[in-house]
Amino acid sequence: DYVVVKMIPDNRLPPRHLHSVHTGKTFAVIKWESPYDSPDQDMLYAVAVKDLVRKTDRTYKVKTRNSTVEYTIKRLEPGGKYHVIVQLGNMSKESSMKINTVPLSAPDALKIITEKDHILLFWKSLALKESNFNESRGYEIHMFDSLMNITAYLGNTTENFFKVSNLKIGHNYSFSVQARCLYSGQMCGEPATLLYDELGMGEDSSATKSSGSTDVAAIVVPVLFLLLVTLGIGFVVLYMRHRRLQNSFTAFANSHYSSRLGSAIFSSGDDLGDEDDEAPMITGFSDDVPMVIA
Image (cartoon, rainbow, N blue to C red; front, side):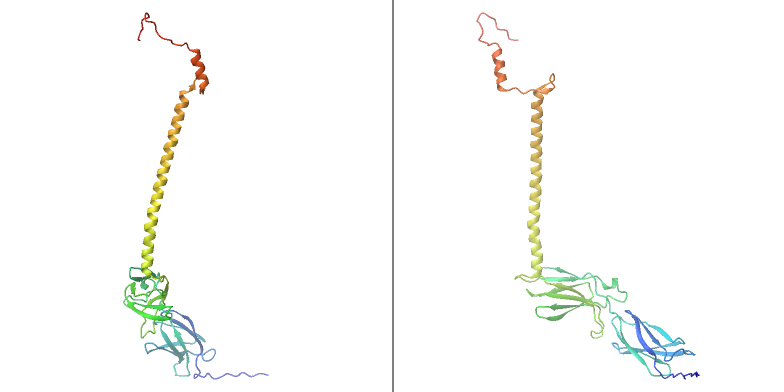
């Protein structure tokens, strides 16, 4: 035996399983289920969005017969904090949740350039990759001294660089740059952080880096130039000597070459003496013999 029982829908129940599906910089996708399964008519929901930073409220209406409802809340701010309440339009019991939107990204390519008595922080404009960022908002810069274990706020700027002076010898610093915080520091961008640990040894870091690189360049460049010149001169001298020796040997060999034998003939000292012995000796001229000069 069995019996079929149909429950009377209770419109005073709250929506079930309210949760966030996806959260971006300017929107959030939320999802919930109807107070009871398989609604037989359209249900009107009220979605209230409370901005916990700006202290403002907005309400949206959603009408659907689906058991599972998905809704996108738009026009949110990066890095914002929100309280979302969903309930039936008849002001029944509510379901609520909190949402934190994704903050603005950190600036790219943060780097340090040392000068004589200060350093310069450089970074790329955040507007290049964040359509929701306006350069008029600007950036704020913080510095952490690891030796003193303190964090200092250095200031803000609407430019893409910042000058930092009065750094202490022997201290290590970490600099961070982020989109300027709004509403008493409650809505900030992600920070880009760079460690600066080149101070110490009795010299200012900027002086050490710039003068050190200059001194090394002043020594290395002339030495390399002299080495190249010396090597060049040495190669020229060796080449000239090689050509001279080659020409001398060729001339000497050609002067002793015998076309009949097809080779060069070099005579020794003994051979020269034998030739002198075979030749008739000239003893002189008689007075009665006329001398003919040709």
